[in-house]
Image (cartoon, rainbow, N blue to C red; front, side, top):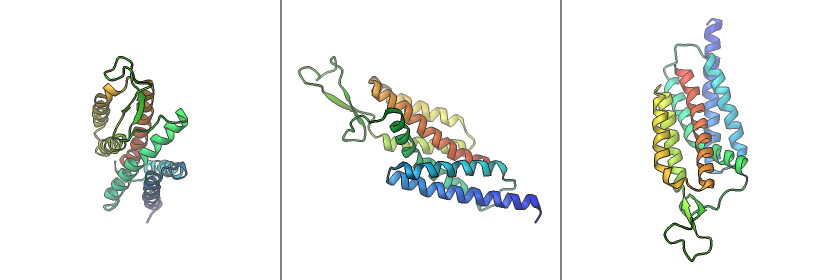
Amino acid sequence: MNFVETLSAVAWAVIIASLAAAAVLSVLAFLRPRPIHLWPAAGAVVVAIVAASTAGSPVPAVAAPLVALLGTVVAVFGGSPAAATALQLAMGTSAPPGAHGGILVAVRPDEPGAAGVSAPRREVLRGGLTIGVLERLGAAGSIIAAFPEGLAIVVAVKGVGRFTELEAPEARERFIIGTFASLIWACAAAFAVHLAVR
């Protein structure tokens, strides 16, 4: 085994090990939302990207599907804690949570049912956790499949679906920050896979 083959084997071992570590940490951060799991997962993704940029070809037969699976797990599960951390850093205290996973925002005085009620609230951005998982799955899948146009489709569908809920400033801010953090995380994890199996 010559030096180039040895370097490639080491790079593949680092890619798989770092993505496996990132996958475990991402799932832990998803199940118990704490930044203590998220920051090491982010570091492991960076290590995987650096190692993937140095990995030589050919891609080992078993490595490609394993790396794709690990990268998808990292993308899907790590994005929610990444979005929550970004929202906490950007906004501090969060808006009051609703009963269905959304946030409570003040009802405009001209909305039906708002008259005669003191500070009425309604829930917006419901189902964000499920939508986020699907969004990251679509984004990561698009990048791994070398179909970056799929990202535009994912963002467009999400934006159109949420458009009517974004009139409250706190809803807009949460939507933009959460979506960007979630997509950046998913794209970084998928980028490591894309570099590795290119």
